[in-house]
Length: 161
Length: 384
Image (cartoon, rainbow over all chains, first blue to last red; front, side):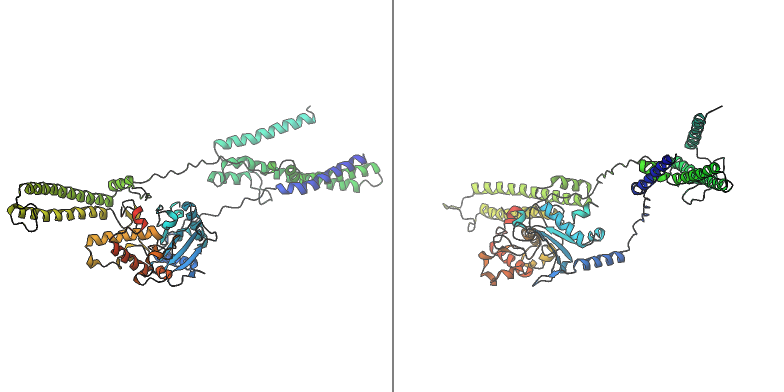
C-alpha cells in the first residue's frame, strides 16, 4: 500500500516537473494588439516644403563637393562597374535643384534599381517625400549605346507606390 | 440503481448536451442567458452574460462563444473542486484530531488529508498536464474563416500617361495621346495642318516646275546655251520668276516639315527618338542661353536647341563630368585628341566646365553646320 502511494506521488512529481519544463514553452502567448491605423494626415504645402527641405539636408549630409563646380556627389556605388567607375553615381546639381542619377554599368534596369534603393536608404525610407524631389536618370552613350531608358525623370520606386 | 460508471456517462452526456445546445441556440440568435451565472474571482474570465453581450455588440466574434463557455466552466469547476479539496483536507484534519488512541481512524484521516492535497495538486497542475499532452488543447480559440481579399486590378484611365519607349517610335502612344488627350489632339491637329500645308506647297511646286519645264522647252535665247541670269526674253523672265517662287516654296516646305517636328516636341519627347530633359544642364532652358537667337530664324533656333538638348542628354546623361571610353569628355562628350588646341582647349579638365563644354560644342556645330560629329545625332536620326 505504502509502495503504491510512493509510486503515485513520484509519478505526479515527475509529471509536474516535466510539465513545468515542457509545457511552459507552449503557453499561449498573448497576441499583441494591432496598433490602430491612423489615416495619413494631409500635409499643408508649407509642411510638405519643410519635409522636402529636411530630406535634402539629410541627403546632402556628408556629400562631397565636386571640384570646380557647385555640384555635390551624394552617393557613389561601392561596386565598380565595367568601365572602371562606380556602377552608379548620384549627384546634386545645385543650380537646378536636381538629383542626377548616372548609371555606368549594364544591365541598366538592375543598376537603376540599385541606385534607387541606395537613395531610398539614404532618405531613411521617406518614399513620399523622396518622390517629390527633382530627379533625372540617365546613362551616357558610351554605356547605354544611345538607348534611352524609360521614365527618366522619376524614380521607378515611386511608380510602384 | 445506476452504478458509478453509468452515472458518470449520463452526467457527461447531459453536460455535452447542455453545452452544445446552448451554443446552437446562440448560433441562431445571441440572447442574454436565462440563468444568471455567478461571476468568478478571476479577472480574465468573463461570465456568459458578459461575453454574450459583447458578442451581441460585435466586439467579440460569435465563433468564440464555445471556447469562452469552456473557459468559464473550467474555471468554475476549478473553484468548486478547490473548495471541495479544502473541505476534504479540513475534514481529514478534524478526523485526525478526534482519532486519538484509534490508529485505524488516524491512518484513514491521514490518507484523507494526503488524498485532498494530491487532488488539489493535480487540479492546479491540470493546465500544465493538458499543455504537455497537446499545447493546442490549452488554447481556447476558434479561428474564424479568413476573409478573401481579391487583388485590386487597376484599370488604366483614359488620358493616363504611359511610359514611353524611346528607342522605337511610339506610334501607339502618339495616337492614343492624340485621341484621348486634348494636348495630343492639338499636336495632331498642328501636325495635320503642317502636313496639309506642305502637301499644298508641294503641289504648287509641282505645277511651277511643270510650267518652268514648258517655258524652258518653248524659250529661245538665240544662243547655244541659254543663261537664265542674263536672258531678257519674256519666257526667260517668267522662268526667273518661277525659280524664285520655287525656292520660296522649297523653304516653306522645309519650314512646314520642321514645324511638324516642333509640334511634336512638348519639351520632353522628340517624336519617340530621343529625350529632352526638363531640368539640368541638358535642358532646353539652360542650353537656350548659349545660342545666339538673332542669327537664326525662330524655327531654326527652337529646333537647334531641342536637338542640342537631346544630343547632350544622349551623350552624357546630363553629367558634366562624364568621361567616355575613347577620351570623350563632359556634357557633349567632346573628343579631346581631335579638338586639342582648338578654341583654347588645352586640358581635358576644361571640358568638365558645363559652360565651356556647351560653347565648345556650339563652335563644333557651327564649323560643320551639322550635328554629324556626334554619334548620338546619328543614333537619334538628327543627321543621316
